[in-house]
Image (cartoon, rainbow, N blue to C red):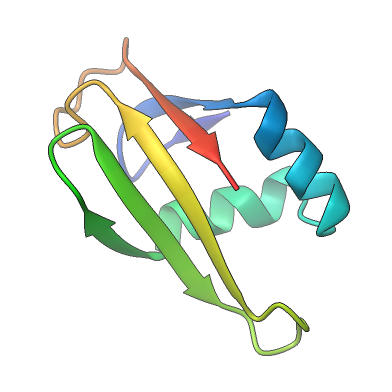
Length: 83
């Protein structure tokens, strides 16, 4: 999976996959959050991405994302995602 927004491949952690299954989040929804969600940076390598979905009981979904200098468009780097 590739993020066009960040120009990086996406690596989903095993814990994130477990949380995705428990919360009925598929890869398409995860990619939508990454591509269109609101970002809050902690620093150059860590951020949160959140998006509101009114049709879900857990209507605000948030991802913890880390990677090498996220703002750098180096396609060899990856985003590591936790849910």
